[in-house]
Length: 113
Image (cartoon, rainbow, N blue to C red; front, side):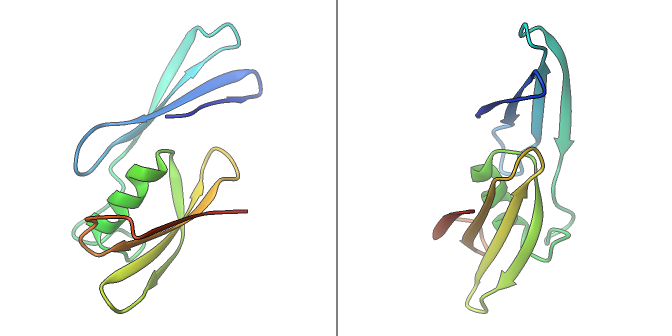
């Protein structure tokens, strides 16, 4: 995952390699000494995420996004596809992810300004 530098500290983002990934980030000081780890945990509950998107669809978008994120918008396209707009918790990065309900593949990925 990408490394970010904010206010003199470095943040390294990662995730477990599972169907339902756990997101985490490690923090290092300006001299790159390890300061700690923050575990984001599981992003869904039941078969649908709190956002209303199916669990598999949400997991696929979060896995590809790769950073701790909040769900900005979920749109059900009605044909088994969802558009999930994610906003990074760490910076201004925002994406629109179009994915089928089963999370099998990302159909479209748009980095938004």
